[in-house]
Image (cartoon, rainbow, N blue to C red; front, side, top):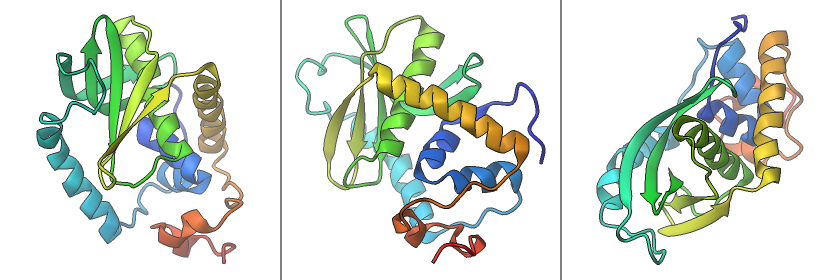
Length: 195
């Protein structure tokens, strides 16, 4: 499937790119091939229940108890060529704080980059600067605060340039340096060069 000018990536595409560039390749260049795993189904079901639980949480951060909280907020940035739906958007004292729920025990770079992408889209959409975001780790029942730094912003914009190149050329990226992401990957059987 050829890349079309003006087409938007999703924030999930960006997260997957940072986890393994080949997942982006399979999603964008071979869209009819989409295996699913049991873990993916569990994550979807747990994710659907989180807004109810989140209403009872204060994110364990002082000062956010009285904040306005909005769930499943759609965001889009035509400047970045990106769209997505952030799990929660907190508005507190003129600040926007995106919150992403993850069925995980710890945060990884791919989660941080996804959160920063939500921050960039929220900034564009609401014309407000986002200084921090939160990742709520469902399995650990822990909130991690992420500063929205210039280095993380650059990771997002650089990745989007490379993602567009992969989609336009339809060339399979090299495998990841570590095979650890491959162990539970739904596309593992498609990568014959990974042990």
